[in-house]
Amino acid sequence: MLAAVAATAITLLAACTSTTGGTGTLAGAGPAPSALPSTSSPNGSTPGSGTSSSTPGGAPSVDAIDFEDCTDRIRPQLGDAPIFDRLSFGCGIMPVPVDYAKPTGDTLDIAVLRLHLTAQTPSKRIGSLVINPGGPGGSGVNAAFGVVTEIDPALLKSFDLVGFDPRGVGESAPVACISATTKDKLTPIDFDIRIPADFAAAKQQSADIAAGCTRKYPDLRYINTEATARDLDLLRQGLGDAGLNYLGYSYGTSLGAVYAHLFPRNIRVAVLDGAVDPTTSGLEGSEFQLAGFEQAFDQFAAYCRGDTACATLGDPRAAITAMEIGAKSIPIPSDDKKRAAGGGTVILAAVSALYSQDTWPDLRDALLQAKRGNSTGLVSLADDYNGRQPDGSYGNLMDANLAINCNDTGTDLTDAEILAAANRWATQYPLFGLNFAQSLFACQSWQPNRTPLPPADALSAPPILVIGTVHDPATPYAGAQHLADQLTVGVLLTWDGEGHTAYPKTSCIQEIVDGYLVTGIPPASGTECPAS
Image (cartoon, rainbow, N blue to C red; front, side, top):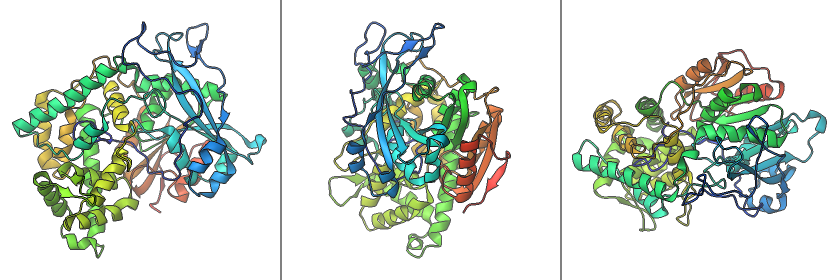
C-alpha cells in the first residue's frame, strides 16, 4: 500500500495515524539496538546484544523483558499533558531472530516502551495493550506518547500501554540508506512520466535508491511484515500476556491481520483502525488510495468555498493545480530563502493536510501564503509528512517505508503497466494522478527475495474489531469492509467521519472500543457512530 515519503520516487505513506501529543526517545535506555549489517555475516546478519531461546519444536521464545525504569529520563522531554505526571516509563530491549528459519541464529534488538499508570489497581489489570501506528515505518515508541494523551485514562487502569519500533524502524535495527540531501531533493520533484525523459528519470531515480539500499544492507529481505508479526508474538510472551491485546492503525492493520493469520489462538482482543484493503495490491491498491485522496480534496474544497479567507482562492482545485504547474517551472521561495516549493511540494503538502480535518486550516493558510509568493506553509506541511526536523535531519521513516512496502510486495509493475496507469490517472484523478504515478517505480528494482503478505483469514481467532471511516483518504472505507469479511471473525464498526483513522476521536467510538478492549465483547457487526 502506498504510504508517505517524497511522493516522487518512494511510496506514499498509507498509514500514519492522526494522534498527537508528547514526544520522547529511548536514548540511553540500554544497549544500542543492533542494525542490519552493511556486509553479510555467515548467516546474513549482525548479532544483537542478546539471544533468544528456542522451544523444542524449533519455534523461538523469549524471556520476560527486563524493563529499566526510565521515567526520570523521559518525562522532562514531554509536554505538559496532565497524564504524563501519572505515568511511569519502562524502557526495554528484546532480541529476536533475524531469520525465523534459523530461530537460534543471529538476532536483532527490538526497542520497547511501557507506559504504566502509577495508581493502577493490580486487581483490575488485564495486561498490556500493544500499539502500532502503521506507515509502514512508523515508530510505536513515539506513537505511544501521543496515543496516551488521547485515550481515556481509565483504560490505563486495565492496561499498560506498550509501543515498540518494528524491525528496521526507529531504534530497532533501523534501515537508513537514503541521505537527507537526497530526501530534500525528492520532495519538490514532480515528474510527468508520460513524457519519455521524465519516465526515464523517474525510473532511474528509483533504481538508484534501491541499489544504494541493497549495497548498504544485503539482508534487507528480513525487514518485512511477516517477520514483524512473529516479533510481535515474542513481544506478547516477553510482556507475560497469555493473549495479545493489540491496537493497530492503518498499515498496522496489515500487521494485525498477518498476526491473526499466523497466531489466531494467541489473540485476546485486536482493534484494526483505518484498514488497509487486503483484497487490493500493487496497481489496484495504489489506485484505491489515490481515489481516496481525490475524494478527500473534494471535502476540503467544500470547506474552502465556505471559508471567507479560503474562498479568495476561487476554485480550490484549479488554484492548487495552477500553483503546482507554476512551481514546476519556478519554485516558490520560502522564508529562509534556502528552500523552495516545487510542484511535488505543493502536492505533498495537500496530501499531508488531508489526513485530518484539523489540518485543513493549515492547508488553507499555506495556499494563501503561497499565492503571495511564500511557500513556508507548504514546505512545513511536506516536512511534517516526511518527518523532516528543523535542523534538516530526518528519521528513517522513508527508508523503512520503502523497504517494508517492497518486501511485502510479491510482483512488480512493468514499464507498460506504469505508463498506462499514468495516462489513465491523468484524466481520472486530475489533481494527484500524475504525481502518484511516478511512485509506481519504487519497488521495480528492489531486491527480489520478497515475503508477500499472507491471506487475511483468522478462522480460529476471537472476534476482531475492524474500524472504517467513511471519508478516510488514506485507507478508504471499503478496505475496512473487505478486511472484516476476509478475517471471517471481523466485526465492522463504522465512523461517519472525516480523516484517517477513528479511535478515539468521538465518545461513541471511544466507548465502544474501550468496552471491547476491557471485556472482549465486540459490538454488533455493522454498528455505526455519527461524525461527532
